[in-house]
Length: 172
Image (cartoon, rainbow, N blue to C red; front, side, top):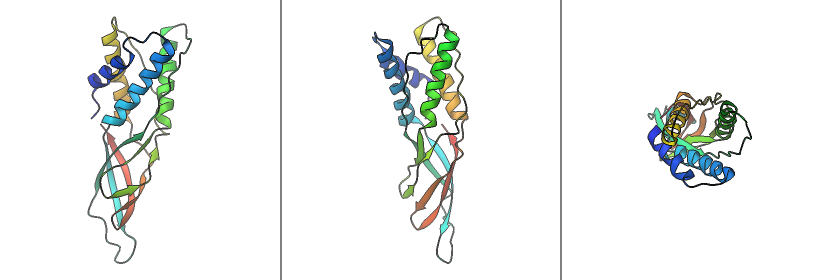
């Protein structure tokens, strides 16, 4: 489950002591991606049936999954204002998610992963006087953005002898 304090802690730890902006941003992007891959839980609605008569429906109607691939590449923006820098940061985080993939990961399922290409724009606004508060605000905004998103593309495949697809219903 995604928890803002956990993401904030991971981002802070990854960038602690970083001197060069490029290396700090690389570490920050990796920390966000790793935390989300390790902690995001996706609930799916599963609809399937046997493809041969008698076309029996699968009694399993829910499945669990996760984000299985996510790379976030952050680079120095050279922006001269904080809003412009945060806009660039948001755009790069969103770009990473747009190529990220999710899938059903429960035992017994063999489904094709889907891409998060339809994720809406991310907006970041940070008004903090210290580093800890800034990371927590950033983490809250990222997690709120992720959990508000419901991926549109189903993950198709099999569950035992049943063939069907799973539609994501929530990310937590």
